[in-house]
Length: 217
Image 1 (cartoon, helix red, strand yellow):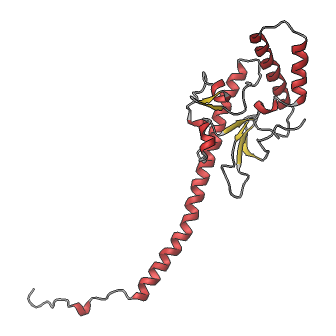
Image 2 (cartoon, helix red, strand yellow; image 1 turned 180 degrees about the vertical axis):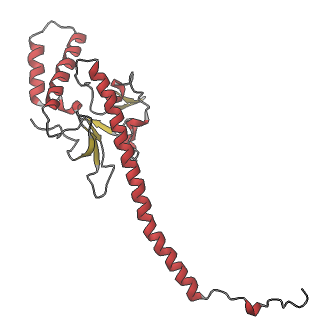
Image 3 (cartoon, rainbow, N blue to C red; image 1 turned 135 degrees about the horizontal axis):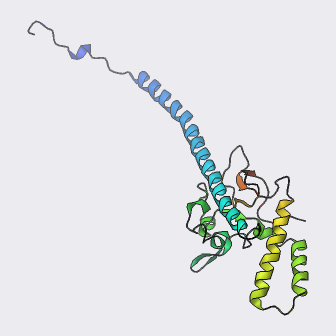
């Protein structure tokens, strides 16, 4: 309307430098608070997925035991890396039940190139425990008693003896000292123990033992 006065530049109030600095300070403080929170959420999500992977892999191991007289599968504790990629290990052993390319073989927090090159983030501890001296002595005595076996028969007998002995070892582990599978690296640093594991009873959780060496008898 003709009688309505128009606003002038003098009626518009701008932010002062002090006010801008105060706002920036508040934003910086909020960002500083949020970054650790977001990092912790991501950490917990990766940890939960890792535990889920271990449970899924355990189900496949149990399926193997169900068709092999309750014995654990015997293989290398971790795949070897050859010219054509990973060879052997538990992923290859269970390939007919769980594809080697399954995402459950990889911890989502594992970013180590050497670890990822093997095709799995998890160490299969029975593959180490089979080298405990008592188990190897038992194997030697069985093989010595049957000297006329072919190479194929000896390999099958070796696997059978080791599988039964290692399974018995785990069945005596009432305190859950030795997981079946555990993170091969410290993938979950923080306020908790960094490695996850799954045990013979199917339980998952923190695993504190060192996967680099077989347990002493």
